[in-house]
Length: 245
Image 1 (spheres, rainbow, N blue to C red):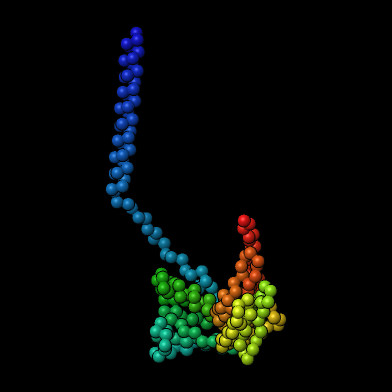
Image 2: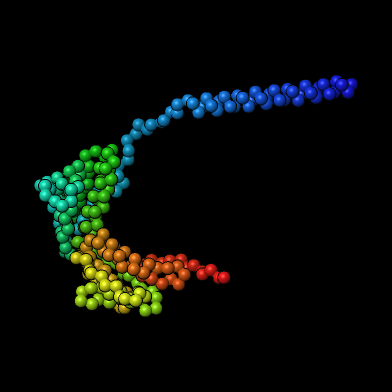
């Protein structure tokens, strides 16, 4: 009886080992078979979506005039602008011109309540054209706002002794260094200091105005421990607690 029980246990153990080995080998074979088989790439036959920004029409006020000179640019210092055409945006506050790539087309529409135009490209499925589609539309919108309303940026100084003032049409910053920082005002930007701790920049070119604000800020960026520095607009910074020893 004891011998039969031992034999039965040995048989069960052998059977379990045999089944486990089969399962293990089958898994291994299937795994390597999957690894060696070529993977199928599923391609979409639908067309790529158009630029979400570029396809939106631009409506501009009656006091703004936009003209498109179709003459190709043949002489320019910027190689990328060769054979482009010129778009001119004029308004009460100024005038701006920008190059239009050969594959970009400007379509003007007459509306009763205001003027309207659309930006289109020859082939929206080409990556470069799709990118320039949205970029061109955004630049035109920025210039329309610039020549009609203008852009204005406020910079605030926080810190003991931090201040700014205008001297001989130059911006002078005193932000804790041994010597003052003197900055030239770029063309097309108006800079005023209504108080020693405030600077107001204004202009018709959005990129120029915000770039000059960034150049001022980098001389004393806000730091999180004492929250001192030069803040742009409504900028805030989360306060950090200093590490105690």
